[in-house]
Length: 302
Image (tube, rainbow, N blue to C red; front, side):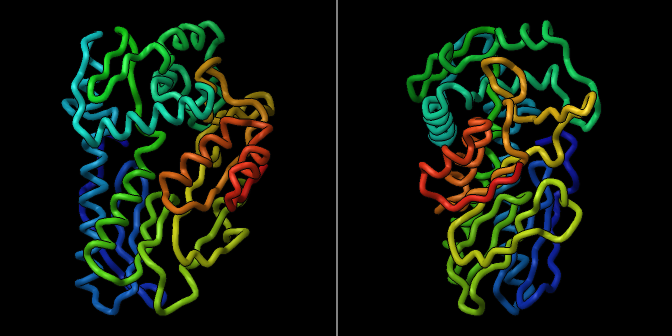
C-alpha cells in the first residue's frame, strides 16, 4: 500500500476462453478473469473489483494521511471510535493474536523503521531492534468495540490482512453482479466467485520460491474457494550467506527462525487462507505440523 500510486485505470484483453481485466492496487498487479465473451461486461466487472480494492487501500493504508489508520496512529493515547468495518478487522486481528500466542500482532508494523527487506545486506543492530520492540504488543492495547485506545508511540498496520480481505470483498461484489465464474487475483492472493460452467476449474500456478521467474512448478484447477500465499521470495535480506525473511517475530523483532520460504493454503475464503498461511510461517519449523492439524490443503516450500 504505497502513497505514490499509479494511475487508477483498468484495461481488458482476451485470454484463454475468457476476458482478463487488469489494474494496480495495494502495490500489486491485480486481475479479474471473467468467463464471458463480452469485453464490456468484463471491463465493468473489473472496474467493480478495482473500485473496491482502491476503496480498501485508501481506507486502510498506513501511508495515507487522514484515513482511519492514520487517525488511530496519531491519536496520542486518546481513544478512537471505529466504524463497523474497521472494528471487524480489529476483532479479526485480535483473534489472530490470540491464536498465535502473540506472534501475529498488528502493532508490529513499526519494525519497518529498522528492517527494510530490499534484497541488500543491511541488517539492523540488536540495539535498534530492541528499541522498536518496546513499542509493540497487542496486549497493551485497550480494545472494547468500537473504542480503540493505544499507548503513545504505538501504531497499527493492517497490511497483513488487507489484501486478502480486499479479494473476498471484490469476489462477493462480482457474485452479486452476475452468475458467471470469475477469478479474482490480487498479487497472488485469489478467489473464485462460483464454479465454472465451461472448464474443470481455473488454472492456478504455485511457484517455488527459487523459480519465481520460471513456469510454476505446480498447476491446480481451482473450482471454488480461495488461495493465499505467504513467503519471502521478493522480500528478504542476505548477509554472509544467511537469508533473513521479512516474517518477523514481534516478541523479538527478528525474523522467525527456520520458517518456510513460502506457504500456500487453500480455504473457503482468501481471508481464511491468508490467516492460515501467515500463522504457519510464524510457526517456523513447526509450519507443516500446524497446517496438518488444521486439515487444509497446503503447499510448503523450504
